[in-house]
Length: 455
Image (cartoon, rainbow, N blue to C red; front, top):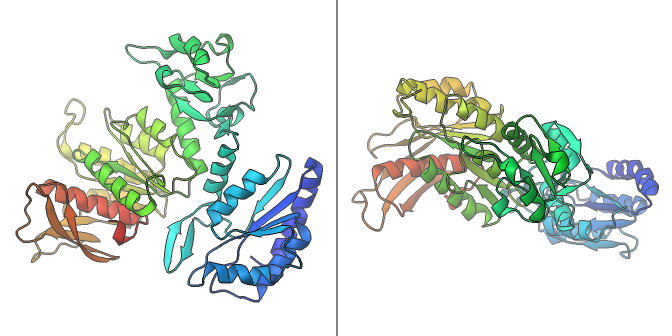
């Protein structure tokens, strides 16, 4: 993030812009609490080598964003080809909205960073997310049919440049611009409805047969279900920087998932997070949930169910979570899970899907805590425990029900102790089991980067 780096990047992009017959844009900011002297020099370099300059925020840290912009503006000889937009997300959106299709736009400054620091707080922020959102607003779709084929394999039929706006497996919910994924089940075969997909305005199809005769471009694959999972995993990887919590367990998964979602909502707002809807927690529902990821989503939580051995590991491999929560392990699915330990291992397999920097969340006092610690394989732990105030348990997130607060129609209150501080919480639900669920959600929320205030 230096004047020379700015100049070299723009010099490298200039031939691309010339070849395309477009202009070269440069959007950048300068970090707060850093060398102020280089700010006007960076602006001068951008002005010298770009046709359009957009000044915006980078990481203001403790400085006022406008003060940083003022320093940058001092480096410009003229503001005729420059504009200052303090909000970086808004700056990206406006720049990509106004740039012509042949133009080349450099988003500089933040690079691979996935947060923005201002006023002592770090918030999730990704240039890639906001660029994708802006490009989608231009009508380009989330991805192309060619990208879809590259991600899932198969045989292409039609134009690879066909834009895809959404992924849908139900012709009754199809919208114009969707790709229809034809799945087969024990009592249905969606390939019978390929003609309806064309009538509903689908842009393309992903199917095992009939693609060449359905009247739409598409990709033909050997297994629609496997392709759906591959597509979801690839789409998740396009937004790999986003914190994503995966919730497993014998009981309380849905409650904990919704509690985590409420924490993310308090942190990021209604449109800033992704969460599982309804019972979309299986080999179809989890991919469809991940395929709802949009650029404005800065964190997410998904529920992983289990209907056969190995399913949790399969779903976790698709979701690639950064936070994995095992809520508990109890006797279930005895037709194929002969022991509770087998259940604990199945649910705990989500921990193996974590990246090296991932966070494993599970109850510290559970009989299988040692097993889950081994499965976490050295990853950071965020264990939680509900205990009496006078008998603490070693856990990163701990809490107890406050005296006289066992629960009534108004819920109950908990005292929460975390690495981020302590707080009293009021739950709108009753029961010791929900106090346990709340601690699990608090641990997962904090592990995802949410501040204590959002909990």
